[in-house]
Image (cartoon, rainbow, N blue to C red; front, side, top):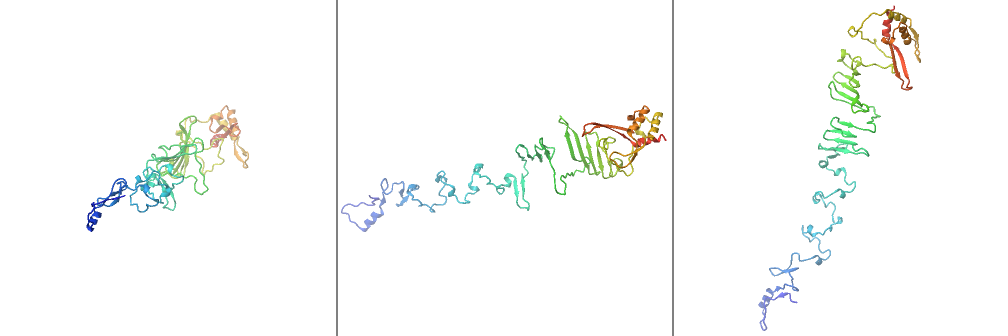
Length: 398
């Protein structure tokens, strides 16, 4: 099968010369077309007359296994040349895929293995979660940029086990903190907190840097039974200006005490321990008495005329009671005691008043208190004497 077209055709009897032969060869061309030297699908004749491979002329069926390796030009293979799923993990070299090769949002949670992401892989800028390894003591910082973003930790049954409120810069345990407190703890099923330490320092240390006169360090409030208002409270206030510690109880009735370390209170006492309001606080009660009260001088009873009314001389009957009381002075021991005491028996004083038709309960020198015993739940009545008044009473009989 001829693959060339003759450049010159000679007739029978023509002379064959060197020049004619050269012309014949030089002017010959390749045949093109079906079943010819080139079919214009794989090979084609260049304009200069030589054969060349057409673009796309060699198909995969013409390539032997392993025939093409480093001969592929840079950038010659693009995504259109790769069949779907043709590149597997075995074809990808270690560290070959960088962030530039990963499309945005291409990696989802399903593609991340359990425990694959450590703190070192978390960006401080994107997550606001900082693990600081530069200091001697490692620390974790959440919301390093100070964004207005809350976060919450749930427990097994408590959805608000820990709530960090970025808007109010506050923390809530057992509920949202709100805007009133920096720390708000709420529980309806368990004790609020337990503070315990084996160290020599305080288990609980509370300090206020507010030096105003009404600075409240600690306030304890109990809700009234069956209501929503808070009516029972205990305030513990520290006044840094006057160096006082004040405790107040109740609902504003002035019951409480003040411990003062310097001048500035009523009468400018130094180191005074006194009631919050005048003549409203009792030291001890009939069922819970102080055993001994030590004093450098003694107690002072108010005797100002301006505070008294119905000032009268003693009646004859009262003078006879005073005379009778002078004879009621006895010596005795208290049950369980060892020392002898001098005084009167309250029942005898009461009877002396009754003998003159007078009621001892109407006089301040005689005291009678009744309460229910906490152990036996029985009603107990106990009588007492104000000896400073009894002494003044007996003096009138001298």
